[in-house]
Image (cartoon, rainbow, N blue to C red; front, side, top):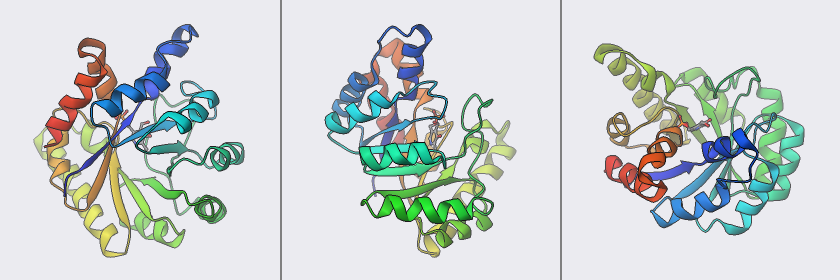
Length: 238
Ligand code: PXP
């Protein structure tokens, strides 16, 4: 099965927010990403609004032709927005104000109570719910328990591993987690830290449906333009 690519355009908004100049506009970027073959557009509406703003999410809802995957923390005010915007999918992520980026998967076990409120509220509006988690079987079991249809496996440790042995060990965790998740009824996506060099092995994991990739694509786009950067990623995924 061909892997789908969700292009995360948060860092288009990061560049805009660096100057508060109104450009570059993630809403325009989504058009170029879709023209280049993206299967979906991913944005993270953070509590601190450091990149994506409320206006972006509302506008993307009416312009995106593929699907919108909204990343959000277990925050009631963001839930309220999600229930108004109605993205196609929501991925629940941990959030911590000091972090530079999402630093790891959600502790599903510790967040069970909140997840049991958030997941059905989103599903009642026909939003597909995914939970971003580390490749840890205990967390994967807890995700089923909370009613999520999907998990997104955090590939950050694989991406950050130094040396072939460490990388192989981290890759095996992702591969085993994907197999285990499917065996207990979950559908599987993956993302974080994936780039043009490390994406191919992850594409060989049969259970994974969509890869959500942002930083490496937006970084390459600075040199090549966004359409070319997205096309190059689709090529790397083949
Ligand atoms: N998936 C999730 C849940 C994320 O939080 C992020 C980063 O916002 C990504 C995927 C994309 O990660 P990267 O920007 O490293 O490609």
